[in-house]
Image (cartoon, rainbow, N blue to C red):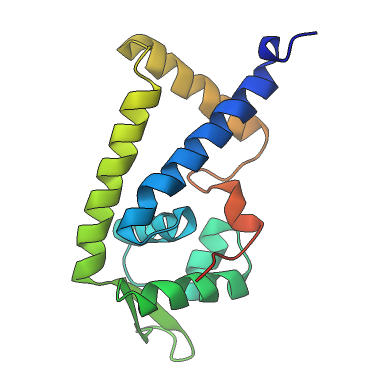
Length: 155
């Protein structure tokens, strides 16, 4: 048996490689992948409560508090009283976060272009469709990295 004949091994090998490079390339921006994920979700709908973010990402609220604390310490988010729930805080992106997020999206684009360079457009479209189908089959939440479930980010 050759491991490189196993789809699961190849997915794991490539996933580890990409995750490692992604973390390495985000580091100069002062971000960790989990923080990027939270910023990306806030960019779609700013002002979510910490609990909404935790529920959306499927992570424990204490982990979310740690991520938001770290982002707030970097002046990338600010907490405000939630307009609909006085007990909750809404999390908002700062202008600095928008600039950092734009740079991080550039990192994502460059990494994807580099890793996917051997594929033509049709092959890439097919690969993405197949990977989405596999992710759905394993009941992975769309757009949420599984590592968010395992640990809080280091500060």
